[in-house]
Image (cartoon, rainbow over all chains, first blue to last red):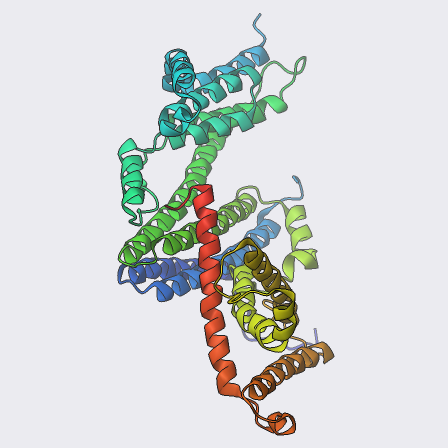
Length: 83
Length: 400
């Protein structure tokens, strides 16, 4: 055992960071979608549609990250049985 | 001894009848009524009394589902029954708004339509029975042995999943109704009523397609969490096509279309109104070809716009790349130089038309006149687009 041992170890987080990022993106996208309704209320059509677009884009980003998290969870938790 | 599979099959056939019991019970009186009205008033009567017709169709689909046991027919019956529940006062207010030339609120408020909850719950039961029956055949084990705790867990998971998957589309459609209802209220003071109405319909369709895509991909997120499988997950994580996706903004195609639309008018003006104008004037002796609406003129405009659209699409595809990293190449340089050459040549042509001699015109291209022409071209394009879309929507019966 010639290698010096590191004084700290990274905690094993697994899929949790991905899940957190995905949920955070989801929350921001829902916030943007709600803002788009509020902008439309004040007759700011273009701002509202831009906000809706940003919201939908973030929603798709969050779904992608959540899918990654789901598969990372599958690798950790799943047995080798099943499809 | 009773074959339990026969019991289950019979149950699957009874479920649609039970779920649509009110619709099916009104069917024997509705069908002769409809036939009598159609025979006396003609087929146009069907368009006037949409709710009755939809109810009758939903009943027919429900009975056919009970006969055939097809899940597709059940979903058709479900959609028809939902549509038949749109309140009639909404339909009359829609008709009144159309008659007065106002912009109607696009959809009834989400709370105004009560969904056929019984039929929805029946659909879930029907699908569960359908799935169960595909794996449960004659001659195999007549009894299913499962610990009751597992059965309870599976049932709870099923109900929770069904509620979650129902809640997502309901939330998204509620959002769309809120957004577009407010858009209609904003536009109700504007003079361009039918144009804004078309915008609303187009926006609603685009957002609906987008929302449907999100709903189906949410199911793909939930499934691996419920049934974690190491093999499937590793297969996904190892495949580069699944993983290496560039970020693609929502409605990217729509934005490329808008870019084409922005380029369309100036390209058409520079090519056909300035550079090739003598040729076109010789081909078609029209006085003011921009604003006449005879069939020949419309056909000519359509042809010119089609050619310009092909040029504009080629330009956009060569210059704009959404979601991928731009790679500068010789083709990019050729496109940019071609656009610059087109602008320069049309400015020189305008300068020559303005009375400047030829060699001097090469040094004094008339850019202000070109700008004015391009300005006018946008107005002409808007005029044609609005006229075309409006007549299209009138033909389809969507707009007043």
